[in-house]
Image (cartoon, rainbow, N blue to C red; front, side, top):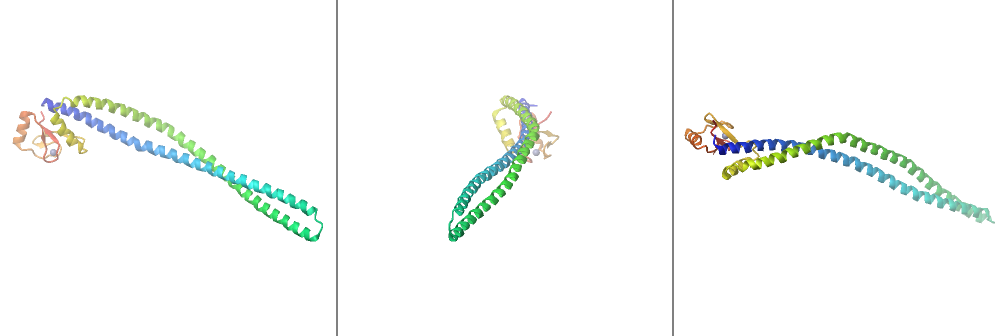
Length: 234
Ligand SMILES: [Zn+2]
């Protein structure tokens, strides 16, 4: 085999290995992303539940303030009723007192509704907090193992790319460019030997004259059938 072809085959060996590692790395990323999204969703759900509690607590403070105001109003109206001197004043004071009690009753009912809702909303916060912890617990081990895989693959890739770079320097520039062009079409395996009279990749028969020329000079030829680089084997 011509030394140029041998040098190119060494580059191809690295490229095929690099491709395999890149595919393994690419397969890890969606799993890591899915975990990140799941964790984010659980965090957002918890935050929303907490915000709902905060909003309901603000409402509770407002309504409590109104209940207190109506209570004072009721007390003032009651005191007024106690000091009336005529039937007409008594009727007016009673009406005011009834009105104050009615408003206080409404506010009190609103407050009861808020208290019930707050109970439910606080339960939701607890549930979602547990859900987030469950997600974190379940993800911890998996994430560690995926991160370890990724780190190992990236280290292997760095070594292989460095070696590929060194090996590529031993291949004549024109030949390397032809090879890179063929590979850039997403082809993983770009260099094949002749097998008998044919391309080992697609079985297209190569004319005797070209085969003889390849065997004589050690030159490579592009297969007319499939476009890979062919060389004459041993
Ligand atoms: Zn072919």
